[in-house]
Amino acid sequence: MNRFLIRCSTLLPLIFAAGCFTHRLGDPVATRFHDDGRAKPVAVIPTIIDTTSFDVPWSVAEELTTSIVDSVLASGQVYIRSGDEFSVIENPFGTDLSWTKQEFAGQQFAVFLELVEHELTPAFSQRSKDEPRGNYLNMGVRLRVVDIRGETPKIVLQEIVRDSYYIPKSFFPPDYQITGWGCEEYVKTPLGIAHAKLTQEISERIIDYILLAQSR
Figure (cartoon, helix red, strand yellow):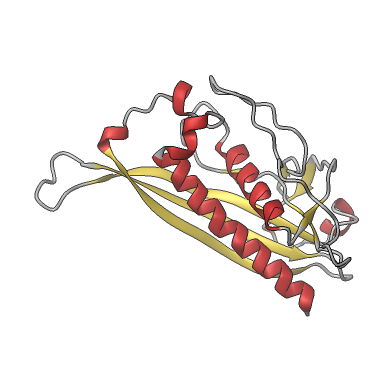
């Protein structure tokens, strides 16, 4: 059986700089309970498995994972435990999920993600097919949410979230020392906007399905 080395993205600090400042993973403050005393569902989100080859001077998997974790935490609906780290797990997209009970003991839900597509394709105008007017950034993330509260782990969501974002030719080539992930200007760049749009959609799907599973 294939084994994956992936780190759990909880509230551990992520030290990274691409010519800019350090970004911390999980900046939003996490609390275990709602204001009225109700317990929030507890989830673990391991670092995204990246099977693509997009060339940037930082880890796209770390960036997307950080954004998703921060977004889920900021919602105030799901609790991600601080200080946990899981270094070795089995294939999270296989048919046998029995190992998740021991690997993620104390958690209620496990969220697995795989970046299966992240590439630029030329965008041509209708009048000219010779010179591209820009590029489309095509992205796809495989998502699986597993309920591990019962004796047998149960998949509550499994899908591939896809998105495409147009990037004008004027934004190439980018200067990642100024506009890379971790830089203040990054959130305004086409790549930063595209990633934020994708991770927001993924975060909303994660939250919705965890809350739905918890209510049943």
